Amino acid sequence: MFRFKQFTIQQDRTAMKVCTDACVLGALADVTADRILDIGTGTGLLALMAAQRNPDAFIDAVELDDAAYSQATENVAASSLGERIQVIHSRIQAVGGEEKRYDRILTNPPFYTNHLRSPDGAVNRALHTDDLPFPELIEVVGRLLKADGQWWVLLPPYEMGVLTQLAEAMNLRPFRRLHLRHHARKPVFRLISGLRYGAEAVTDETLDIYEPDGRTYTAAFRALLQPFYLIF
Image 1 (cartoon, rainbow, N blue to C red):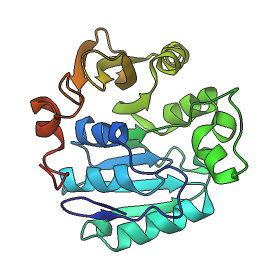
Image 2: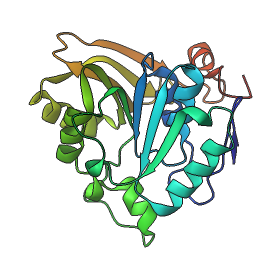
Image 3: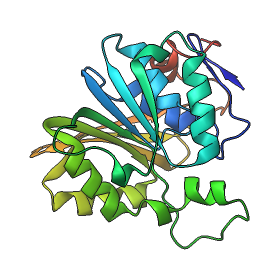
């Protein structure tokens, strides 16, 4: 269980637990929008963070895995934010159509391709791209994102490069990119990119979670997560 200031995440039945990089995505992404889509919601974390940050947004949170869908539904229902979140049990490839497009799409996608498999099928779905390869993900985003919308995605640096190259073919380009490090002496381990159609320039930023001592949270990280973390 992970308690935030305005909601609680139960995660005993989900393969992907609450992690710092996903929380940074949820706190950073632009959610000033009426309709938001969370692809692969897992515990419901990103959907709940978006609902907290934007009291006027309506959010569709899509999840394929049975146990994760059930747990996300319970987490949303237990929250005061849940009236504006719909948890949908489906493959994202089967969701929506011309009549259903979104102002913002949030994605913390699986990214392993050739790594060793877990005997747990839920873990494989959460970590490996089999159920949602990058080309299919980009096709889905192209179908569901409004012309003036934004797609926010979290990936390791190499995988973000692959995804960005594929998205370029659809004229989806980064306009903002956050390089996330544990601290200044460590390499970047995640990138968070905001993409939109026809973006011509990208603003690059770096966020360190800790000071160089590896224990003290940086002021920038504290400020970003202060609305959510009980410790701040």
